[in-house]
Amino acid sequence: MKILSSQQLRDADAQTLTAQNISSWQLMERAATKLFDWIKQHCSKKETFTILAGTGNNGGDGLALARMLSVDGWHVTTYLLRFSDHLSPDCQQNKTLLEEQGITITEIQAEQVSQISFAKVVIDAVFGIGLSRPAPIWLQQIFQQLNDSNSYIISVDMPSGLPTDRIPSPEEIWVHPHQLLTFQTPKLPFLLPSTGKYIPHWEVLDIGLDTHFLNTLQPDYYYLEFDILQLQRKRPKFSHKGTYGHALLVGGSYGKMGAVVLSGTAALRTGVGLLTVAIPECGYTILQTALPEAMVLTCDEAKHYKAMEIPFAPSAIGVGVGWGTHPDTANALFSLLQQYPNTPFVLDADALNILAQHPEKVTLLPKNAILTPHPKELERLIGKWDDDLHKLAKAKDFAKEHKVLLLIKGAHTMITNGEHYWVNSTGNAGMATAGSGDVLTGMITSLLAQGYSAIEAACLGVYLHGLRGDEAAKKQGMSRLIARDLC
Image 1 (cartoon, one colour):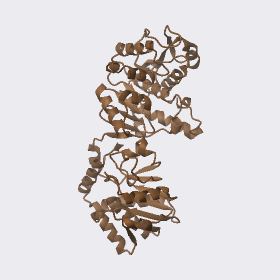
Image 2 (image 1 turned 180 degrees about the horizontal axis):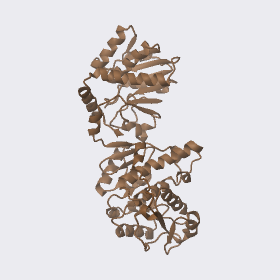
Image 3 (image 1 turned 135 degrees about the vertical axis):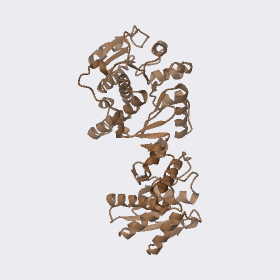
Image 4 (image 1 turned 90 degrees about the vertical axis):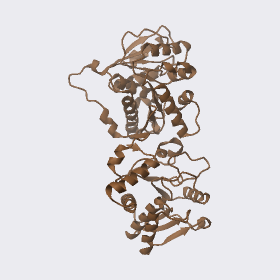
């Protein structure tokens, strides 16, 4: 699914009016009907409703919804928050329709904030995607009162006061909804840590924007959903283990061999035909015992990894899990990168920390190498950031400069190739546990070894990783989830 900017959404609205030969008010009526249908399905007529409407088109949606609910016998109190002297034409038309049907609208000016009372359910339809600057202070006061109330808050399209295309300052107050009903596509702020944590539940309502025009749009962000699973290849009847590649995992150090076990298990569970792990001597018995399906190579050092000969041509290499940053290990990384300039790579954990310590060696990264840092490792690579959008911009610049794929891990892990972002939809907080990243490294390495492209392996690996986390959490709860459950 595409994640569109506010300008792209406005363009899609305009194109829809032309292509479908409808008015903007008719499109608004269509959106309000979708809201009405959702409320009928999820709410009870026994509940009381407050609708907070603004003076723009989002307010027009709210007024249209107020009319539909009132006509259908729901108990609704409607407030029009007059932050502007002029209503948008469609908002004005819906206000007139309410008045013609004798439905009361209470208009609120800045000095009348105390007149507002919140019902059990509050529909927030003050601002939509058009907001770019902070809301007026008196409206922010209303938003704060609403957030502090015991009402169940449903926001329309966007939480009022939250801009679509920038991160609000810490001082800005915006509505924190319990449920968000957004039109046509998700909006980026729903998926960012600093804003998404206040939007626990959101749902996309399809309002029938022109499909042909939507298909022509090339957004910066794409939302990964279940259809990504169509990338998974069927295993032919007459295939053999060599058909599915030979992956090499390089990692481990004294006390951290479990990372290699987890990564290797995940690689095998994701379908690679052959797996070899290259580790220090201290891990030999552990790997042969815990992962009998894998072949094991050991270097000459007992407790840390040192460069060694790899006696085969790997289909893909995953490096860094549980590795440490010993100077011998750093030299081994540089040697691997130089020895296999055309082999697909996944770099994780200490491989990334070594690169951060030796930034001049970043030029050794093969084209389309996949880097999977956790937030602190990401900061060491790209430097500090001011907010979530700044972080994404820096990550994109890094990926573009070095021609790699960079993962930005989080509740909605993102992948950038320097041109676009892919945003994951699966996963849960139970996956915030030791070893989860090692599993992801093994999964992506496995997919690369089987011949998937870098972007396919990254997107499919991240999605499957989260999907397995969701399945495990559903089975036993988030708190009980451990990394082995993801393999």
